[in-house]
Image (cartoon, rainbow, N blue to C red; front, top):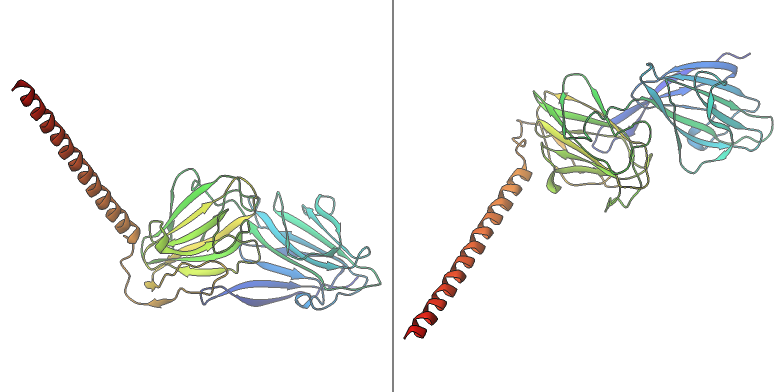
Length: 353
């Protein structure tokens, strides 16, 4: 029996707004040996030996085991598997529990996946087994995972206000890490008592649509305490892993997260972290989608007075215009009515004459 060599490193990926998102990497060589892995709300991933981001090859005659623990009975595991395994001798199984006696999420899977395949546990553990034979070797497997929970709250039954504090809190789409449900309209207002709001978008997996349109399911991040077109920072409507994790700091003390789903295809949704940032910043906001280049920049300056954002101004203008139009229409009706009355009066006078 061989010992497991475990290496923990930090690898960074581009976030989309000039920062970096760190994920923890677990690498191991093994032979009928279980490796205990602790998950949390940050992305981590493990690979088979020699994977090298899909360009390498694994070792023959491996029998590898990993047991992943979400860390709490109220937490599940969200898993994304990328594989390149030679059939039929090399295969991977994922179990919904802490051993191979649990219900399999997938059993004896081989072949190649063009995109990561997602799985979710129904409880806190996942058990993974990878077996290879003595013949053909391919790239292997990459398994991305995080501990997850439905943090959606009451944002889908009415607008929900969340208070950002010094410590990070989580917000997710409804039913996360399971599939979000049909015909949902959800709105969360995140407010910082002191300073701005920092958002760290950890995960996005939405029904795929043209990024320039987003006609189906989507979520938006709005810079301010209201929602309208000119304060949209980001609109997301693509599958994982097309959307790179990104971060955003509000220009004022509030951010609105808005999610909508239609009546058909469902995906996993989103997971984000939010916290208060006492360093006041201002942000140049340009509406973007997940396929666009980053167009929001931040700098440490005096606090921008954006809490009463331009959405309120737009509504005031619309109200004034609409009110003025009503007054004009009413005035025209009164004038027409008076003319008709005057005309009828003239006809009556003539008839008497």
